[in-house]
Amino acid sequence: MQQEGLRASVRRRFRYPGGDGTSTPVVPNILDRQFQVDVPNHSWVADITYIPVAEGWLYLAAIMDLYSRRIVA
Image 1 (tube, rainbow, N blue to C red):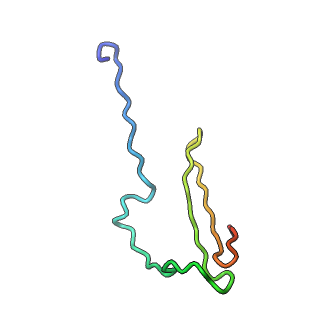
Image 2: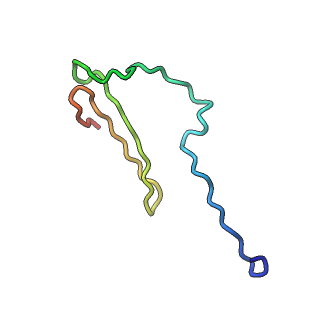
Image 3: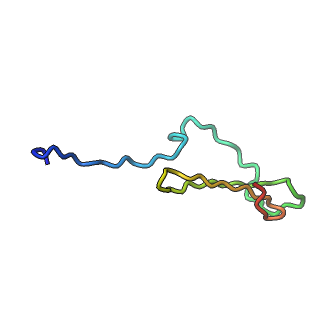
């Protein structure tokens, strides 16, 4: 490889956005796994995922109202 001028390509390890988490403050668990609510628009939950595509990353986020169990955003 050296004679031909070739080098191995090393893929970098994937790191989640936001760093190592040491500088991020811990948010209190207000919901405390109580997923049964009695009024609409009182408790929302959210999730985000990263999908690799040919052009880079695609970010998919959803927010759900726990009362109606419908996606609101």
